[in-house]
Image (cartoon, rainbow over the protein chains, first blue to last red):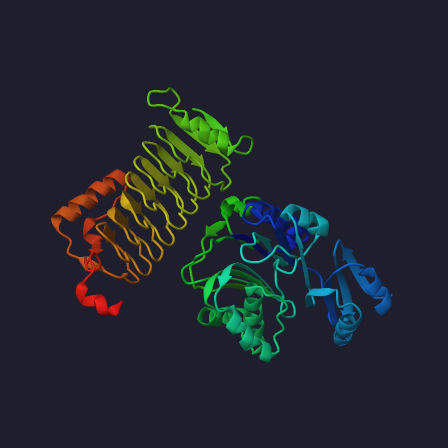
Length: 291
Length: 227
């Protein structure tokens, strides 16, 4: 069992509250996943620059070694380093050689991605989710059933620029998909089946598919149980497997689209009393794009 | 009328208070405010009490109900009225998956839609859905009646036993061993009774009946080679 949440804002006046709303949703999902938690937020971005979310210890030293003038925001065990796009490969190369202990959890113009072991409320507090602004975000609370409780095993997973995915369920053909994706140059770093699903979507979108098209294709190619909530720089989407094995509730108003594993996760959202609350159909792609 | 505000008191206390009620007690009409989608509200009731839930309920609301009337004034989560034995459960909004699952008796009325697996393994309950029902509904349904004023999703009545299904709208597809059957006067009379019980205005002539072809009941020795 896991809990997943997502919030996609249509009304920009809510953007300063994105983090606090998402933190509330995440905390309610503690009953579904008390082992670890994580979230991705699409915040501000700067054209021509890449935000690298790094996880590890002594992250400040990286900035000093690389470029003391660069921007780095430290948040507990993570830090967001902003580098010019044309320097990204160089920075990643430097990290691989000099700081192999550091993990890049997410990269893109606007995405920031944090995850840790612990109760969701504690994880949210450690990273200061409450104070984060943004246009959309997704989150996950994990109850590990098949692998150890580690930060690597926590969601979301990001396998492409400004892309992220949270998953409730389990995939049965992730090993063969992994073998298919690796020669295609899709790097999958953990043993987690959900990362394979993220990698699959990255691969499809790299080939020109839209987020909705990539999810449509996954209905053919992914075997198993899943409810996915997926984010891209300008998109937000939801897909459930054809027998809707895992729960999902959505709410839509003029101000937002929200997703929760259970309705409880949505009750503190503004205007929820008058929202259109619905359960997404199995095997149907729901996608929204920022205008 | 006792009013319980779940914003300030616990669900466990609410359920304990409802369980303590006996037929003939004075306060047999309760109202529950701020349910906020909490799970297991008004579960395991065993007295002719009426409980109104002023909002959305979470999982297994009114599960195992006997004798009680539970009204959910919003949506209900997974497994509303699961394993109900008797009484009445009325959801004014939509119901999530597995509404009325395994229920033996009583009446479940859903004003909105019910999602997948409505009436799965139903064992005698009557379910009336004013909207539509999702896929895989009435899977392995054994007894009882499922009435749908809207449409039904795919694989309706898969592996059904003796439950009777009535649908006014489109059926996306029938499951294994589920077939359309003739509507006779006894079935129209049965529908009229159910409409009255559920407070529904509808014309029995609009409905088609589905049930078991009874081909999966017994092991056929002729099929032995297939296993």
